[in-house]
Length: 403
Picture 1 (tube, rainbow, N blue to C red):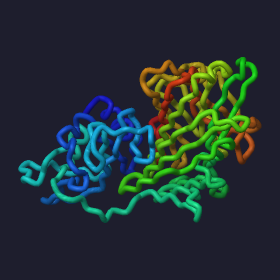
Picture 2: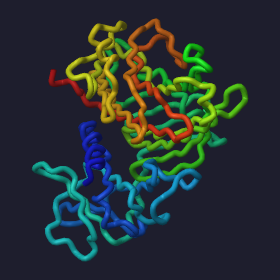
Picture 3: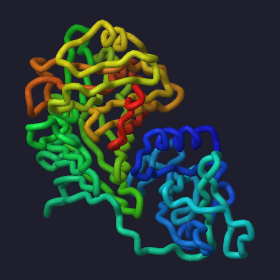
Picture 4: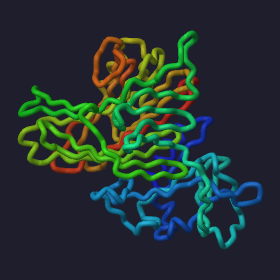
């Protein structure tokens, strides 16, 4: 497994709980399958003396490093459609791994090992058509016009407002335990997206939020482990199209990954100053929850309606290229988040952490930030495709139980 693939696998195993976790094989691990037809490849695990089909999904990947969609005119694949490409991914569920098969037959054309501990899980690629009877874990409910209504899995449900993928409504999580005497309520207020820039100067800033963005779904791919959605959003200012944002959503049972790319026109540099992008999630009445990050050491933020000196110190630390943050309610709902940039950009990032019951930060449905957690990016380039990936993983794990 390559270093990048190992980081991806470790990240999602780090997020693992009593629930299973989807992990990714890519790079060197899949070299021997490059060029083979995916509709003639089965993935199985060896258990109780036989090879049994397991859930798996091949993800076509573009040369530039994001999911490939045939409807995305800017995406290019290295390899033919329907065959394993050199950049493609293979998803499996870590809970489906089996024993090692000591004497594989001719049907077995490859072995994939997950983990290097005392009991690694083994998967085998077979030269036979895959089993087609697995039920997709993700349901994207849509209305008669094709606009999204909600996202639903066995563990959570996320409603969308006004048929807009970027306007989040109520979010419920099956394992969450509400405080004594309180009714079960939405855990999240809203997703907050902001694009801003100074107009002729940094002091006079123009800001666009979710309410200015209306993504249009172009393509949906459903599979036994993930549902992928490609959407485009035309951003207009004073009636003029400034840019088009391309979003690739990878939706799993307890995980959301949102790939975003756009290019600010080079001519815009004559008018716009210091363009920035923000992405954050506003919690709803999550008092007592705790947050730690990979880059602020043992410092910890606690949701209590105010900013402590420790929390202010956390906000001053720049976010490194490899990063994660853990947010835990201590009541059966935790979140692991990560932000990734494409290489080659001098983009900077900082942590957003707002804990104030009276602070207004639109868009929002409930007053206050309780808390609002995410990232802000600056030094966004002009005239080039800017790409970033935001990942969220939901779990019932108590991250800080050791304290």
